[in-house]
Length: 527
Image 1 (cartoon, rainbow, N blue to C red):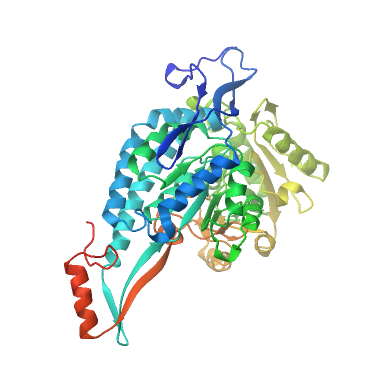
Image 2 (cartoon, rainbow, N blue to C red):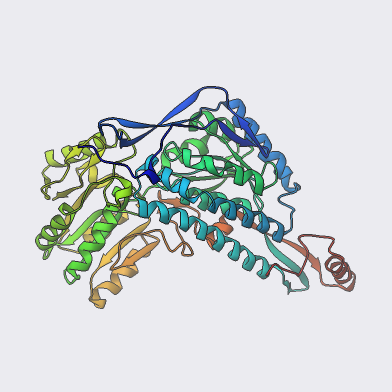
């Protein structure tokens, strides 16, 4: 049966995007192109993937041109952008966010088509990104105000501010190709760094409408946007040793590979958001209805394709049967649908992901697990209905791997030390969700968990936001901390001017301030 696509969300003709941004100029690519397909099926028969368009497959030569552009714009810290007055950089960012907002409908539509994100979540991702930029601007103003005060200690007077680090290579993820990419890019450039940005493999076309906004809002070379394969773009850039910061949200293997290419790794600052295997721990006094609802959203929002998703559930032996019954019923009631239909479950954007999910299920079943829910694992093209697996043990792949898709392993426990041991031995340490109501049990548990992960969610699912809260992880889950205030710190370094506290130095400082001869040594700030 044919399903009609609303006109508002239709893509009537392929988007053959040929432009890039280097050194403040929009260039046109005349070389090889990469076809972009959506795993949303074709409107004509819903049996074929939809051809969306194409993007440039840029080469090493252009990657190095982008690097030279960013390097020249920074000029070892003497360039126009890193030495610019704070309020001028802020005005550039305010100009950008206004221009960005005019592209909302276009970007939202591409989020749905490129990665299968439903309408509500696509709109939320765009609006959240706008809020993130505005919050970053306000936080940067606060940091600047805090830095406008001289400190005096032991006869030394100092003005301490945060300064840029240099040239940033920015690589974002496919699951949040706008929000999480900009959570790297925006704080990096507002702090005075310059950047080379390559969009993710999936979610690449949606960056195209924003090229003009970047060009018109920032000085030449501050933001350089190139398209292509990571190996052909990022690798030669890293080999030069000119990158000061690697900013990446993705897999630790990618981060390790790129880091190893840098000839002076000791000089390389890392800002990384990596994989996670976030557990839920359900105690025997948990509110069952609340727990089930939170676990459904926590495991299956965007089909579980979030580093912040709940990826394994530990349930007390005493209530595991009740939980599985109610959880299975709730999961089986979910609908598969297309993004504009606003269902929780939508097509998976990666063509090979259904095969991978199937392999995890088959491996678990062969080692003693059962598919608990009736619809679990049923597949049609890139629609995969979530599978609840129980009992799961440490011999199964799904127990250890970050599945990043709609398969939910469940483990029962008698002793609370069992999930704690699992988390201690895990390679990951981002978040955990704890469900229960007895403070005598919860209190000691929290005290253990806060030293294993960086966020403990009480009676709620794991999540990223609000963006003003720290977003980070232990072990293989992250390096550095993101989310507004923390991100500004991650992309900068404390720098200061110091002088012995004598009359001559006081006079020099007074003249610097009164005559506004330095953008660094000043006591004014931007309201």
